[in-house]
Image 1 (cartoon, rainbow, N blue to C red):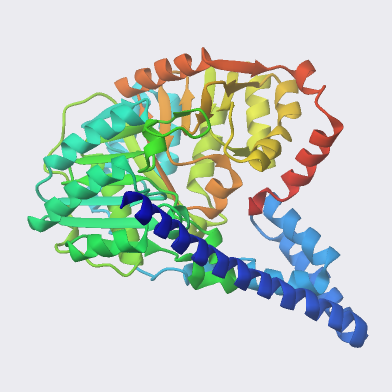
Image 2: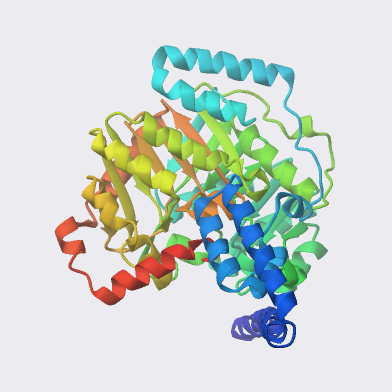
Length: 514
């Protein structure tokens, strides 16, 4: 029976993907035909397209935004003026078009006392961690409040995360909210789904958001329908077939948020799938991480879910204040949940957070990420930090999940290594954890990768931790990861093949579409 369901799910997913591919290829064929037709039969019209393409390229070059984005589109516009203009009109993704992708609902407003409290917390931070108070102030300016009275638990692997999550789910009394890029049918999801359905049957408010592209081969329509029949409210983020003509499926909900009763909220890099707890093996050992916020900081993540749910057209059973934590928890340090997404462009809070952390670090800066494809500003910041004496280390997978992203990352290694940045590869398998650790005082745990997609295209989230005991746990975890890594050295790296060097350079140009 299980095998039959899996087979049916894969066939259904294959048909949906095939439909998307066929429609996409049809769009491309029409664009190419139009280009050749005008070039052959309407020379003056084609010349007009060339002139307009140059004007658009000049306008794009002078606009605010990502250098990689502008370079890639300028190449297409100037090399293929007709096709490039049509493609840019359809898929260029202006700010107004991005705002049309979701319902224009304002986020739940912060209370005046929350701003006042955050400013007071920043002032107190300046007494203990003056260097990191600037970081907190930057994020408050982006409307992400600073919280104290929050106990943070760090989970260095999927097994410990899912164990804690299941125990707290079984104790839920008011509501359960979850928002994930991947929900995959399997042993873990079967357990979670059973708990969710049981809670919904008892009148507890259960809401689920999942990304359609991330789940297209992992979660069947039958399972989704079953959840709805049993009282679970479900919203699907950007169904892939719905926006083929605009390539909106390029904008994905990559966030990982699990909220329980307002008092507890999880985030990190872990999706709801068996490989994240190594129940099944994919790309060797799957190394990941997450954290739990217990206390007033949980509201920061719950608020993000409330916002997304409303933007997808959903409603709530109660007013916003019902979903706040019951009370504070006595704990050291501060935390600051945040999010990012394409609607922020050209401002990118996550990217600014990382740039500020890199420039603020004084002793060491460690970053774990499964993908590495950054803008020149980020690359420059890493190199300057290393040149100034900061011990900068980037930890990457030893067994990548995508060969092309692995090759694209290599395009940056020569420059990083020549400036003293140390690069490590996790030999046991796939390092999917997304962490930033600075000076043993500040850390970021979340869904953000060090690549263009996370900083520009995806909806992301995470939590900044300042002076919390969890930062020490993250430090020990990264030190343990380093013992299982091989280091890449500059002399060794420069001996790689010519074919690989050429592949890296070509792929780097098109990282915005990877």
